[in-house]
Length: 188
Image 1 (spheres, helix red, strand yellow):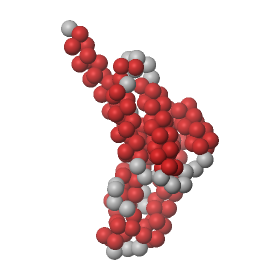
Image 2 (cartoon, rainbow, N blue to C red; image 1 turned 180 degrees about the vertical axis):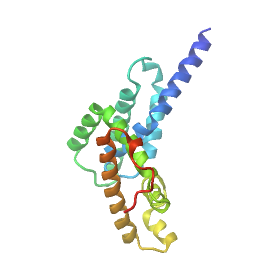
Image 3 (cartoon, one colour; image 1 turned 90 degrees about the horizontal axis):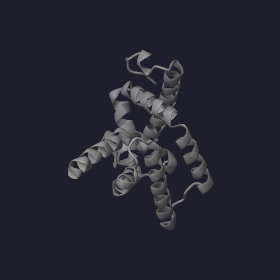
């Protein structure tokens, strides 16, 4: 009987972990200040959460707990990068950012949903560029070579895409319903 309870507990834990992966990854990316390796930190966070799953109390705020664990994993990554000679932004700024993000979890979820909707409206080539920049191990220079374009051109394109996405997300949040926005592609 105890074995069945363990299986149910594990299932619930995996469900919670899966449900909050996007938010935890976005939180990690925001704390890393543009450094690569967010996916690696997410994996480390997932491993640490699994190792500490017995510490989690079902019925409490899983996302807050996952954010706290992610924060420590980001700090560990920052220390590793610093030891490796990488330039890291001020520790106090990172701590303040982490505290602010943890306080605004519901706003964060709404913004993430809005961003997903806005990215979905981008033209296919712009979506591809965003994916390469933020989700791929392929560098921008390598991708520019594949497209036979300069990396400067792609950087300028990304700048415009980010501006459009920022406006779209703001409009979506202000309208308080991302589904009311037009489903047509957004153009730059």
